[in-house]
Image 1 (cartoon, one colour):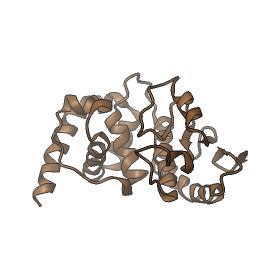
Image 2: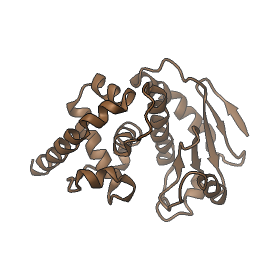
Image 3: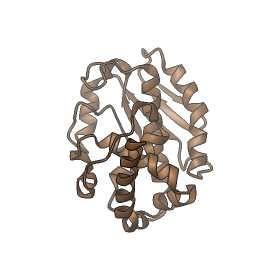
Amino acid sequence: MVLEKKNFIIDYDENISYIPEVVDFLEKKMSGFMNYFELNSPKTKEKVIVFNSIEKYKKHLEKYTEYRDYMCADTYDGNINLLSLEEAHKTHEHANMTLDELKSTILHEFVHICQKNCQVEKYNKTVSWFWEALATNLGNPEKFSRITIEATNKEINNFNTLPNNYPTAFTIGNYLLGNYSHEDILNYVKYPSKLLVDSEKILNDAREWSHIQRIK
């Protein structure tokens, strides 16, 4: 079943009873994210696809990456793709996911969509820790806790193999949002080459900051 709203389209199995609540939530929240990224309106209506089959979701992911148990949502094809609550409960990582967590997961992915739409400079290299730093802090911060960063910059840049990668990104995002201006952060989104120039300093300072926070 397909439902079209002002800023998004949602494609879902009509047997999923909680979709109206998800739709109401998204209608209230999405405009705030677009304002943050200075997007007057989406370039196109964003599409949210709710997979009510984990096997179909795995098949979708095959085109982009190897499936791992923690995966329940993505934006690889430009849409917001996610498992239904019932299918997420079949995974180990998301066995206890609540409806509120599912809704905030969609917001996490919507932050990524806004990042893509905000980006001006076309750049092949994606700085994963930066993308996840913003998405975890703006989209679903209630899921994460700040940690003391011990990983090296090289390890952080190899984000997919980094233990505690999302808590690390969340902590870096805490540091960025508290110490950099909104304009600075948007410039890093718009122009990834600027971020790459400053990334070593950001990571070094965020690591030091995380240790200071532990002492306090």
